[in-house]
Amino acid sequence: AYLAMHDFSLYRIQSIAIRYIAGFGGIHWVDMEQYALQAYPLIEQEDDVIAHMNADHQETMRHYCQHFRQHESLNVTMLGIDCDGFDVRADEKVLRFDFALPVTDAQQARVALVEMAKVAKS
View 1: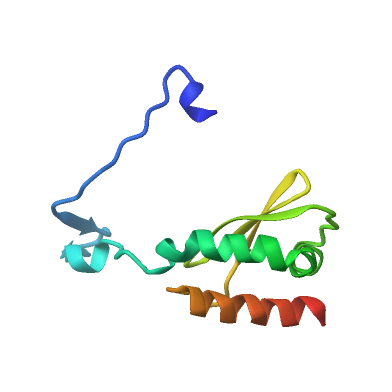
View 2: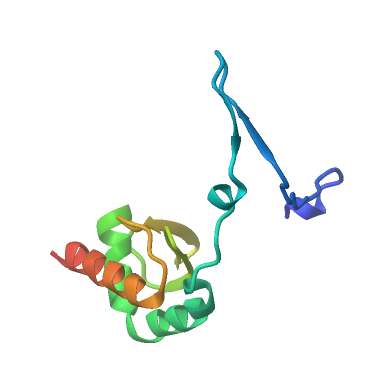
């Protein structure tokens, strides 16, 4: 929808150096290795996690919606998962669920999802 607007564009910025200026003399260079996000294994496993959740855990996702977002849903579909959480389409609404801690792979995501399920079903 945004791209259809007459004056909207997307740009990708590839930084080569970053200078942090905080004011009152708080100025320093930022190390690019510390600044740039590193690829994480979950991105390669995302489709498998989503397929598994949508095929085998519909009821659990409904519990997530009820407990964490107070949203009663008949139809739920996991849309995406990343290191910080996941998105679920609950009927016609898209809901975001955050993990307590970042996850880096499918096993950590599984642990986080199971912990959330325990809380949601209690």
